[in-house]
Amino acid sequence: MDEHELLVQRFLDQDLTPEERVAFLQAVDADPALRRRWLNLEMIVAEAAQLPKITPSARFLSQVKARVVPPSVSLWDRVRAAITVPRTLEWNLAGAMAAACLALVVVGGVVRLMPERIVEVPVAVTPAQTASFGAAPEAKVFVRLVILQPGAHSVSVAGDFNGWSPTQTQLERLEGGMWTATIPLKPGRYQYMFVIDGKQWIADPLAAEDAGDGFGSQNAVLDVSI
Image 1: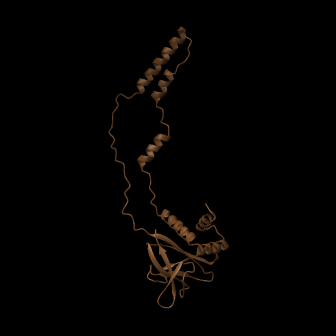
Image 2: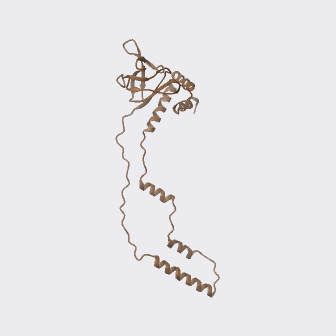
């Protein structure tokens, strides 16, 4: 990760001081490649937040539990292990009779504990559920607009993407007098201006291109592509 990538990451994480934010925006204004990298990372963060969260099925959880939790040992397995484990015995008459009596008692207890009949109960097995997804939404790019206006009380953006409405898309104030908004746009070419305190219209000083509006002013131009 180079110095510019680290700076972009710290900006997205809100980890920059007001002075460092100003320095970052100046670097973005001077380097179109850095601005594109910044906007691409913004798009990735926004898209990741909208990914569906898939909950594992009960069948999957039971299969994982069966592989992780060791199976319980039945009474019959414990008795069989106790009988079949090899031992060294001193064979004398008293020991042999004691062992025979013990074996008879154990076998009798096992026979008494065993059920008289084993009934097999069929269990309906439901087919595995598959997640279904609707049609993919139309591709959009999340664009982040930023402007430095420490003395402003409100900042909005108006452009041909929102009918040039000065109230529809409001920017959020950050520390150091920074205002920002992230908006989803379809790929295309857009013109826009910032509206300060509802009355002062200014072009984006960080825009890479501008165009005349036909009335003697210049609009900022934004090219959006995937």
